[in-house]
Image (cartoon, rainbow, N blue to C red; front, side, top):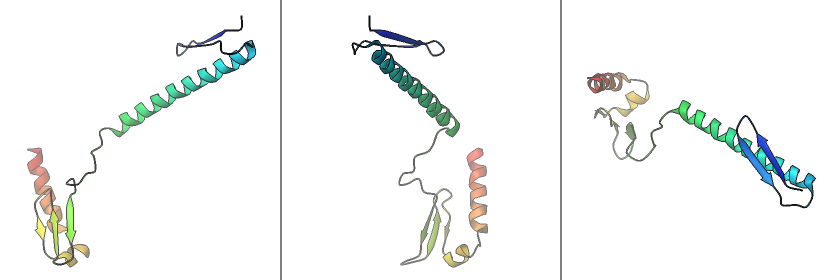
Length: 113
């Protein structure tokens, strides 16, 4: 007579408990289990929504870099997507990005075609 079954109708989750001899303790235990399952379900739904919003993320691994800056022992900036190499590092660091921008635009146009 001390067993308890609790059903959450909107989600369809059913919990039953008959661990204790007391009806009240079984009811409290069943409510805690039900709350935990509802929380897990809501958390799972939220994770799925966030994953859907985030879309596919590319892994950040070695080799996925876009540009390399070498200052020592020689000066060179290499754009790995376009293959452009610039030897005047100081000018690029001072804001002269025209060569990098032009190379990227040409690369992007070729990638779309």
